[in-house]
Length: 233
Image (cartoon, rainbow, N blue to C red):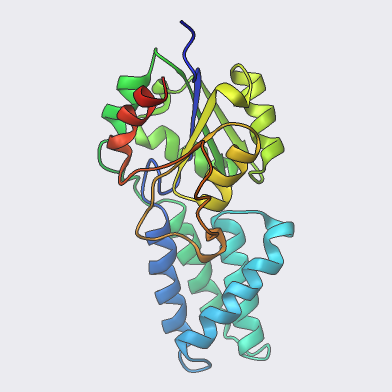
């Protein structure tokens, strides 16, 4: 009997390992650096606006975030931001690019249980070098049959990836912490979407849950994935 699923895609940041917490920590540093020029709330609003504007230029990841911080600093100070502050922002970005990788609970044991039974594909967006660094540091690389680092995640992205590394989206599942990037477009492509909420998820990744979708599942943690897969058949 042919199983319903042959390929499983996994998001990386905040699905396999911690990520958003480092952005939040850096935002606090950024607010402290610009405290003489703007309140923290106002600064975060301006930073989010800059990030939205810059996604099409810089894409997702730490480098684009750092450039957006510099742009925001210039804006809120009317061009008077001290060079030392710009230097501190650059240092904060470099620190983010070297932070240690902390895998989330039960990730390794879940991947090990699935490896060999299914084609496992890590599908992540962000900076190429940073994502490759984190995968290498995580020690999880050998558990994946393929790695796809993409500029964005859409239904067409998943159709292409699951056709390349599997039997098409109809027999594929995508697992991740972002409804907008991981779950909804995978379901739109014809696959299964499993939502694994994380305490910290970037506001630009928030969309309503696709309740009522027959191929939608929600689990408390990645350690609960195996029973979901077994139930699908």
